[in-house]
Amino acid sequence: MAERLPLSIDQSDWTVPPGCDSSVSELDLGEGEWLFFMGARCNGSPITLSVDPDHAGQPGLRAIHDIESGRVVAYVTVAEPDPHAQILAIARAGLSQHARRACAIGTSPVAGVPDGAWVLISGDRKLPDRDCGPFGAGPDGDAYWFQVGRHLFFIPPGNTQGAQPFDPATFNVVRLADVGS
Image (cartoon, rainbow, N blue to C red; front, top):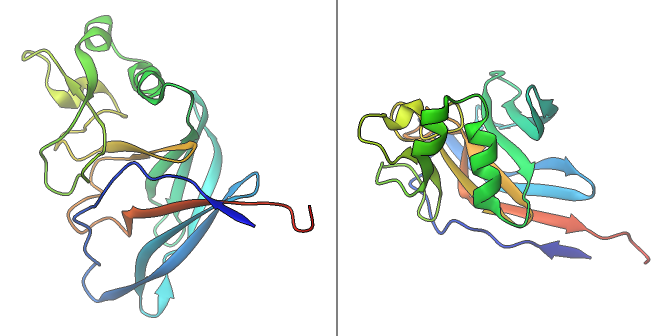
């Protein structure tokens, strides 16, 4: 028996990279949970992702790599009861006191950031959004967070506008129950 967990984003502007088509792909998140999504299939091979153990300096935050390129394409963590507070705690780690106070959860008008996604932006006109750290909106404002079921995902800067190997709006986390129970 499988249980589908809810998705927080409605749609994205994802397009398949040039010369590729798309196919359903999967990623084992552990603890009986699988992530299914539409991913690029280039030269007949679907994208293959892997999840690393805890990301250095951020317990519970794990990097998702595109195995072929070795590039980090996302991060994932188990969501706590208040996902906004959790995003702020992760993103503010290592920031200056001024940046910690100025950076807050918002939405982004940047093309390629899905509807319903969250970004960490500066509420201070003197502090650019890019100064909200590595888990903030990024230099082009295209880095974002979203929740699927009990998981928070972060898409780092540079993964929109044709560089992203998957459609985050198709993310579906399925918890597989023990057979026969």
